[in-house]
Length: 263
Ligand code: URA
Image (tube, rainbow, N blue to C red):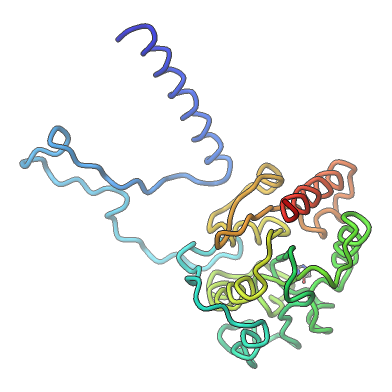
């Protein structure tokens, strides 16, 4: 191998190591890579080897932090209006969250908003009032929107991954997320925002279908249903750790989101 090729191979290996380290940091411990068979790698007499992809997947018990599989994303269909999506949701009893809820918290704001904020699920105040982000975290979110990026709260659209309050504000379970996902996707298709801003680790993880390290990946662009997605910190987290750094991070993420929505 020439020196040039050696150097190139070393550079490729180094960047692969970086990618693997980053994925490990985000909790990914294996990748499903389709097996590519060539005449050289798969002689007809080769013994059968079970790859990870071929192994039967044992059902895992639901865990609060586990993100939903990306396959739960409903395909874009003829967009319904927000009212039609709300009507279809009805007096929902599709998952266990209906047992403890007071109000369904569908969403609020401008049905044609450029910016859509998505949190994980209603808290106590939201459950009482039937509106998203109206408790303490909601007050901070409203300030970030109205004082920070100087947009009236009513001009953006705000909703959550799940529409009913999880008991004791725990993270939503995968089956609860799956039951609500068609309605979240319906809201996104109806509003057609220019940018989605997810609030906190569970919301980012659930939209991206994988575990995420929010403090590392906030401020970076992703897409959901073809729409630019900016994950940022949850206002409740910022309230708990009210540091200049956290406030600056959210401010920068929101500024970037507004810029993108106007470009
Ligand atoms: N936290 C959320 O994620 N959503 C709300 O609506 C309120 C608090």
